Length: 105
Image (cartoon, helix red, strand yellow):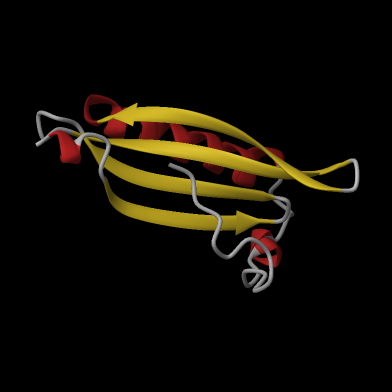
């Protein structure tokens, strides 16, 4: 069963301008599950581009608390701090040509 350690069971990529977010569901040796959330940011370096990444691990016992906290924070920004902003303007199609095969392990 060592093959199952860190085996990726599900992956969702969200492109957001120069950033890409990855939500990956993985398993442990004991058939437990966790989510890794990775932010990848593209930046100019010398004669090309480089990527900087930050990773966060989210364990099952924290799923509900995390979702509730994220929802509260987003709702506060949308309704209390920026009530006049039309957030739908930020919904755009993915860039077809940018990093379509980019994936973190």
